Length: 507
Image (cartoon, rainbow, N blue to C red; front, side):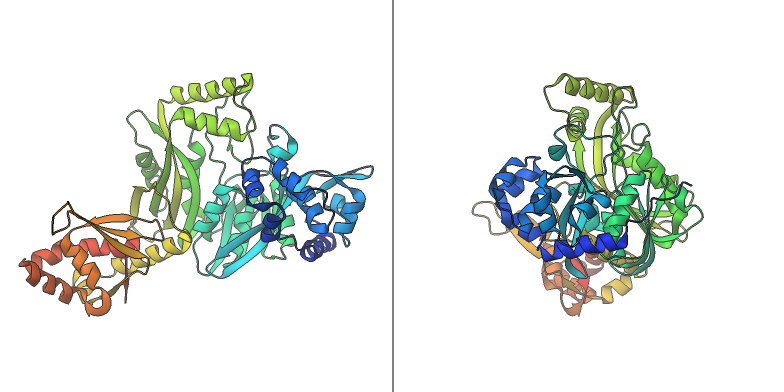
């Protein structure tokens, strides 16, 4: 295995950290410097409004916003003043800028990034390559991506609670490794890109986070023979044609045909998981003529040489044209250009060769089981979801394990409560006394809406931590003039589902 790049000089990184702190270079301060509209425009790849809002300001915050957030050049004297400990010379020594006479040009971005998890809120500075707007054209294929929507999604999905050892596969700029280190004693971060590993090492040092080791290599090769309590990965899952003339970006293209990269990850991750260890990743999967995408993921899980529990959530489904256009634009090729049409056509031809009808995107949560898997949940959730999904999924796994040890008699003896974020909606036909539809709605988690009948609605409404489930069912049976045993057999499986999905909780 090729050795990882050298760690950046600690004294220079410490000087940069001190200067960023002194300048008040925080996410809130940056947003305040140019306003909400310009901030939104940056998310659309437009830097002009932010630069206009900064105007002729020469204070340290404004200089850092231009140079390190937007990648715009700055006078050397202004950079030296904004970074009094490090200076332009030190910034260049860290590989983050070049000096061109009296002008300093950024070669990387360093952006403040807010985060929040079960332990609280905080902020990191994340260094990555210049984005498309800063470059002014298509991205180079070795581009190291900064913090985007997908990486924030995965960071929010990471499970809470302490663990000993974690693996971040395809670490990129290191955002998942930093997030994992919040609850894990040690993290091994791997990538096929030495440049990505250099950014990961820099970002760990810049944020004064120890316990992150970087290793060069593909998938699980750098950790063969080791076992991890947690594995997290935002892998290069984008489905890209393997034909001449189509660029392959290291940050998104895994070098395999179709969805083979995600399939290889799912089939192989169990062998680096300790017993009870979990793996979380984002991925794409193809729908092919006669083959449902989620069923194909189910086959990948079944092909693992070790037993895996699986909870797979499909969040989005795109047709081949929409998918092709999304990723051609992502690479910086403008719609309407000859190159754009050629690349889209290459994508469509590639999909046609495999009879791909749609492409799914979603979240995968896998867990190494001791014997036979007990959890095999494959679902489609396309509505907006709540925050802190990692906490929600962690609670769901805990509930699942408790339910596995709880027979129906024990469940009937349980005292339950309704979750704080659950509301009920009743829909009546005009003039009707009884509702035609009763819904339970979840404000957090996956923001599910569940249609229930009057019996289940009454049971949920009575779960206030006072009486056992069995007593409540008997009372409801009396009110409805129903057989208590039959009603119990009908309601208890649905109570189990509501406990897993977070509508109900043990009192």
